[in-house]
Image (cartoon, rainbow, N blue to C red; front, side, top):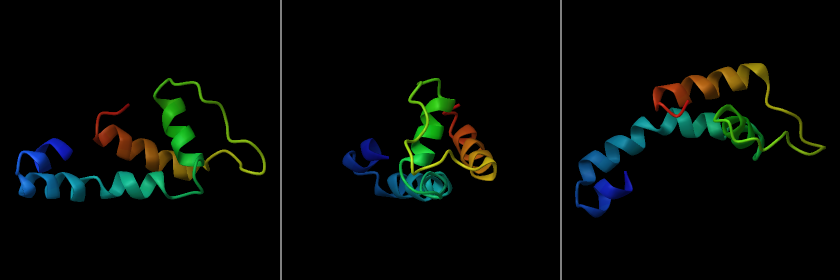
Amino acid sequence: MVHSFFKGDIENATKLQLDAIPLINALFSEVNPIPVKAALNEMNFDVGIPRLPLLEMTAVGKEKLFREMRKFNII
């Protein structure tokens, strides 16, 4: 997206940004850093679980996040 923008391909940069909205929404579906930690753990970066008072991401939230990550071949 950034490369497209700086090459002057605003149309492609815009398309990539719009395509990423479901992933962005999934990453912000719960309080930060809960989804980010879930995503990184799924990518085999052992960042552990959030510290209290935060809890781990819900199963429904993880399912949605991981589905969007698969669409981008992140996992």
